[in-house]
Every structure is written in structure tokens, then in C-alpha cells.
Length: 395
Image (tube, rainbow, N blue to C red; front, side):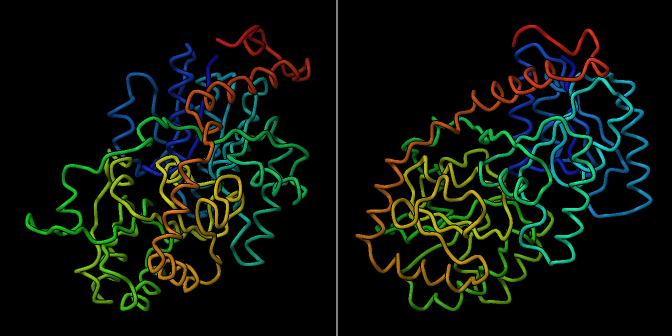
């Protein structure tokens, strides 16, 4: 099959990792895979996987709402679709999902799929929520298949009246590196320890791209309030993104430069988790975060905001703690209380190690996604079928 995936942003973050993992599986299975993305893509993806996947930048496919650029993006996508003649058009992220599906009419025989990585109308103002629901309902008429990263995320679309059915496919990843991971070789540097120090401080880890919705700054403000009540600790931020300068400025303004380590984007997230005593995620909006699955797979207790679908991996007081997403002080308070009770922390770590994460296996992600394509292609109306769009079996 010829498969086209469409994203607005191609950063090194969860939805992109999910999408590229799917693309790589499909390419290995013999499919022709192209990724259409907006400007400002992280060059890592094409440098690393350009031999397997074709990457094409669409300059007008910008992230913010921009009526002129958005109309131009629809036109550019239509032309690209006609040139590529895809059997499947799979859109991801909210903006690309809307524009990419509007443009799909240029290839009537293509299966139109939308991947729901996050609920765009959750955690926003009432006006924005109404707009997003309206827009999603509009393009739902141009969608043959919805795939979500969790059951709860998909159900939100059904409950909003956007569609009748969503197929959940968990965001797969290689889990083996996260089983009993060893700390990285530079662990002393990350914890700001001297060679002679015989006791490491408590390591608190957040793996998250620097975006406003991840709320690094808000967490830092709450963390600073409880810091005097915490045991010696080091807060580790790992990732990259456009909001990093603001986060660094907040660390300086709050007087936390001796407490926070900026790890950058690491190719060994499992090792960082192996160094951590406790892991956190403070996003106000997510689908079902891949990084939380990685935390749990490594046997680390987590504190995470109560996000849609989070109950599918985090069991409150079993393998982690679920905090109030509207109150960052609740997250900081739970961190303080947990670090004051090492028995409680150890019990949650045991619960994390005993959690079954097999549904997030990497192989299942690509295989199940592609299987859903084939099932949906076979049920297309005859008026939309072409000889190439009904493959007999899964490659």
C-alpha cells in the first residue's frame, strides 16, 4: 500500500514517536510510506529514518490557526495527495487532522484515517471547546476510521457526538530497555554529586517536551513552595522544545539553579528513569502519555495529573498517585508526602513493577493499525474503490 501520514509538527515528542514507530513498522512490512509535515521539523527524524520513510515538508502547514496559511495548506496537500496517489491518508494532531482530511477529497479512493493522540476540546476554554467540536464534526464526515491512543480518549469523541466508533490502539514502544534499567554513566553529573559523596539525593524526573501544556513552569512554582520540606533532592528535566527558555528563566527567577538539572534530549530515557526515585508528569492535556507507560514499565512510582485515559495505566495508590489537574499544589503536596514516607514509595514501586504493560508492545502498534486499514478498505463503498485499495492480506 501507499500510505501517507500527515502531522503539523514533527518534534521529538509522544505523538511523533507514536507516528514514526507506526511508519517504520509499515515500511518494514513492504509498504510505501510518506510523512507530510509542517515547517520546523526536528532533523533527527529524517536523518535517522530517511532511508525507510519519505519526509516532505509542507511550508504552509503551520501549528497556529492562520486562515490564509490554512487555505494554502489545504491546496498544497491536495496537490501532494494527487501526486502521491495514496491508498491511505492517516492524519495526526488536531490541526493537521482537520486540514489533512479536508484535502483528502482530491483522492476519493483513499482511506481517510484520523489518529487521536489528544482530546483537543479538553482542558481549554468553553469557546475553544465548542470550536474544536464543531470542526471535528465537520471533518468527521470525511473520515472512514478513527484510531485513538486509549479507550477513554476515543470515548470522548463518541460522547461529544463526533463519531460513532473509535478503535483504540495503544501507543506502542520497545519495552525491553525499560525493564530494570541501569542509571546512565553520567549519573553523578546529573545529580551534581562529587566523587566522594556517598549518598545520592532523591532524583525526581520529568521526561517531557518543553511546551506550555506540559506546565513545567507551574510545577516549578509549586515545587519551590514545598522545597524546604523535602529531603535532599535533584529535579531532572529531560527533553527539548520551544518553551525551554521560559522554563530556564523560571528556574533562575525561583532560585532553583542548584536544584534543577536540564538533561537535554537524551537517547537513553530508560537510563534516566533508572536513576529516578520518582517520576512525574504535569501536563494539562494529553492522550495517554507514552512516558508514563515507560515510567511504570521501569518499576518507578509516578505522580501524574488526572488525564483522560490515565486510569488505563496508573492505578491510584497502587503504582502511582493521580493528582488534581487544576491544582499544581496538589501535585507538589503529593510529592512532599510521598518522599516523607519511604515505605509508601516502596509499595508504589512494587505496584509499578507488577503492572502488565504488554498492550503497549511496539510490534502491536504497527500491526494493529495496518490491520485496521485493511479491514476498513474492504468495507469502502464500491464507488470509492480502486484495484489497489483492497489488498488481500496483511503484508
